[in-house]
Image 1: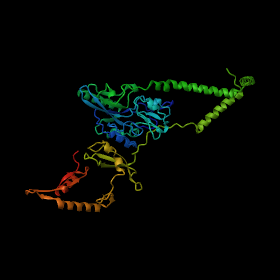
Image 2: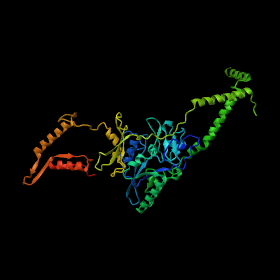
Image 3: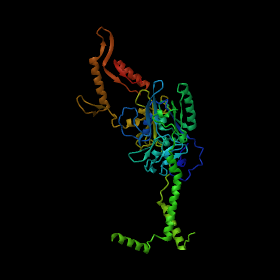
Image 4: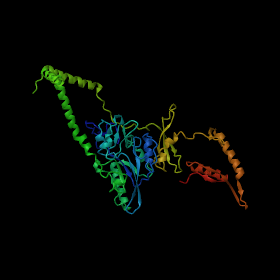
Length: 301
Length: 196
């Protein structure tokens, strides 16, 4: 599972193929967030800030438990608290740890125009490399979960790294380690899927008939997955999208259009260069100069 | 087919060669290697301790700068849960998870301080002075307010005007001794926070 610098599956705005020899030997990793075990204590938020050396500005109390209110360049994960009244009229407090989902098919990476600013490692983690980031914000437009944020400090995009620095040396992410209720777990994607299946069965026997795993196929599956009590309505969990997809605009502009436009650009440049060298700059013929002179006299009398 | 003269052919090929040579000489942007952030604990000194907050007493690992060499002056820069501790097995609550800012807090008390009556200033005193002061005040208050017997002659031996707060992270032995001392003085208002 070691993450050396060449264990890269994908790299933004890069056409050279990724190194492939180790493909298949590195297992996919995943983080499983069991919303049914979460008590909203925010230990994950604190551990995330501590490990990643981030300190967000002190915010304002707006009367809700969400604190900070939204993700930012310095808050890579936030708890979102939703109050839902079920069919029986009982209140259900649906708490979801929001942050990067580490899509198998990452919209941010596809939309990114800066070479190497976004990479996907062989184990599935999608990581931002801010030294290459140009701060354009295309990753935000490309993300189906609305996760990346441009920092107000340096105008670069930031998000959860799934603690790629910890995973690289064989450790679990900081949020996973700290979680007091065991709502967040980490392991190979396969193991997380089987653990989730077991938990879903358990929840079904406890009256949550629609319990299920959130691992949306529209983005090729994710490396951060949720166990939900109401998997049929993910929207209840502070607007978790039911069927997230990479925007077709991103697919067309960064997919088919890009090589075509590049080809046209190169053709125009080559034609201009050859033409200039062969025939030199455009020169005005004496007849044209004379005609222009006559026209000028006509106008000015 | 367009006709290209010998001179034109040399011009085009020569300029193309010159352009690509300039690019190769380092004028083209360099490809950055994608690498994860350096693991910040690699050779830091790891020290086990107990979280100071509540009486759950979770095990923590404190990571200090330097490998313990004589000239490396240590400073704690990271704390996480101790996976080998039977109480928390690596987990920490939001308070424990942010202990690092508690350690380096500007408001952290590092030595005994004394504020004289009617003063608005704290002054640093030695531990000896602090113990003397505490002992003197305890004695004075106990002499004045200790109740040996109630009005109807019942022996109670109680001292109700002073209370004691003890540490949450004390070991069983330290807790036992603290309890003995406090109760033998007759104090009833006693909390060692072992009740979360």
